[in-house]
Image 1 (cartoon, rainbow, N blue to C red):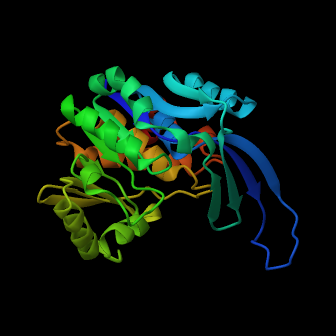
Image 2: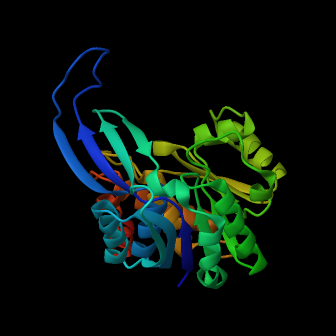
Length: 305
């Protein structure tokens, strides 16, 4: 069983559904409204735990009802919340997910997610040192992520970076301590300048990421699938064709599920991508981020079907 530690965000998601986005000055009725647990970090941790990994979370919530709700979402899925700090300085992070019939748009208030520090990460050193993988994203301060990746590297453990939301300012010291980077096509272009259109551009983008110091790369391309590169080896794993209802947590589900089965030497990268694709294909068929994330049993059942 893989041991996975996730450093990241916890958000309460307010999901608003409507037939189409309103024009400037226009008022339209909602077709649905719901609240669910979210945050890229929490989503990835829950996905890893439900897929079978022994999972620990590093993050911060407020001393409010939303914070208690988010910690409960972690523990309900079997995620160790020992290193989730509580702050009375800011409120728990929140996100507003706008869904029409074809796409989603997301607005985020970082709240306590932006207060995660290197010292918070250092308190979690026992978990990091014992983990197969440490996963992080960009919804918490990069300084904390750098410290976490340094601790993982010093302990001989592997790191996975999801560079989302996209940014052009990724410190070199973070990239050189990253063992696997998992951007989507937009994030790849932001980091490398390569516009992803086909497999050749994926190869070019992945090679540029390798030149920045990351040996292993996965570029996710939504409903098309995912491209992987390990050293000089590479391939493309097509996505499973399903009727998508809500793609909000698809990428997070992919990364969490991937970490649950990936070998620390990345020798089964292609097979792990296929497993992660299957998990994502299940998640997009349900509404909400964390409610849609499948269990290991559901993923395996879908594989047998």
